[in-house]
Each structure stands twice: as structure tokens, then as C-alpha cells.
Amino acid sequence: MGDATRKSALYDAFAHTGKALASGKRLELLDLLAQGERTVDALAKAAGLNLTTASAHLQTLKQAGLVATRREGVRIHYRLAGEDVAALCALLRQVAHTHQAGVETARAAYLGTGEAEGVGREELLERARAGEIVVLDVRPAEEYAAGHIPGALSIPVGELADRIAELPTDIEVVAYCRGEYCVLAHDAVRMLSARGRQAVRLADGMLEWRLAHLPVAIGAAV
Image (tube, rainbow, N blue to C red; front, side):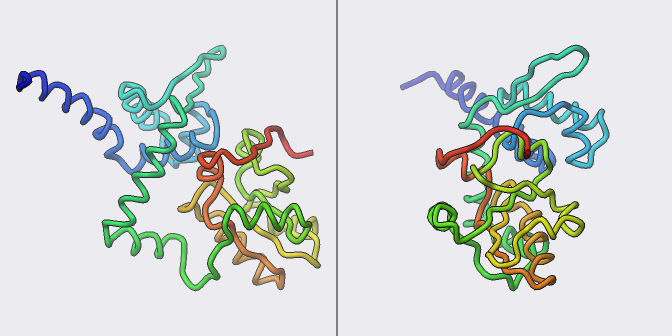
């Protein structure tokens, strides 16, 4: 039989990771980092945090080994420590949604209800190859540059109303964003539908696309 003290120390080490994840804002920061490397300033702005609070959360994640850093001059850039961290976040959300009744209520309140079900990844690939759809990335431009579905157009959702004329009128648009629980694609589909366009969203998003090891293109829109 093993030493009880050493066993406790092992499980406490596991729990250190769990404690780092026990914050909605830290999970949001990990979700943002799953889209690509970012500076503390950029993360704070995207998550609606002040710099001090964002830095404290990021230090907690770093101490747990969930994120890594690099320095460029005076700027510190954060990234996920590995793809397994992104997979852990996706699994955590899946488990919570399956076993916690409150998650579906919160999801519906945030993302909305009444929309048609999104298309799957394989269907998107098949229809895009056949030229049946336009794939639209509605994330911020820097996230598109860090990695996007090959062939996707980039129009951040905040610019969509002013740039809708850039989309063809005779073909369905499939919008996608960060992941299954990202509101940006939902907002884009609602906006496009209200203006008479055929639009649907990808059922999940870039997080799940990467985890499925599907093709990813890198670089800014041209």
C-alpha cells in the first residue's frame, strides 16, 4: 500500500490545475488564447478586465502550467502551453453542459434561441469544396490572421453591417467564430438573416476545428 502523505501530495498537485480553472474569467482567457497568442493588453481588452486583474489571472494560469510566455521588448505574449490545454477546456465545457442543468439555461440566455441548427464541420468542407457556400469568419482580424478555415472571408462582426455588400447575394453564408459557445457567429447570422441573406452558422468554431486537426490557414486577409 502506498504512503498516504505522498498520495495526498499527488492529488493536491492534480487539484492545483483544477483550482486554476475555477474562475469564469480564467476560462475566458484560455478560450481567447485558443485562438492564438496575445499580449496582456490585448487579453485584458478582449476579456473586459483591467490590466492588474488580467495579469493576476494569467499568473495563476502560468503557475498551473496551462499557459506559456515569451518576451518581445517590454511586451509579454501569452499562449496556451499545448493543444492538450485547449482540449481540456473543450472537455470541461462539454461535461458541464451534459451534467449541469444551469449551463443550458445560461447558454440560451447568452447565445439566444430559435435559430436553425448549425452545420457540421464535414458538411461545411464538402459544401465549400463544391462552391455551394461562402465561409465567413466573424472573429477579430488578429484571430483570423492567427489561424482560419482555408478560403474563409474575414469580416469581423462589428464591421459586418457596413461591409455586407462584400458578400455575394446568391449563395448561402456559413459564419463561424471562436467555438461552440461564442456569440459572434450567432449575432452575424441574425444580422444577415434580418437583411434577407441566406445565412447559417457552423455548429461549433475554430477551437473545435483545430482540435479535429482539420486544415488551418494562417495569415491576414488580403
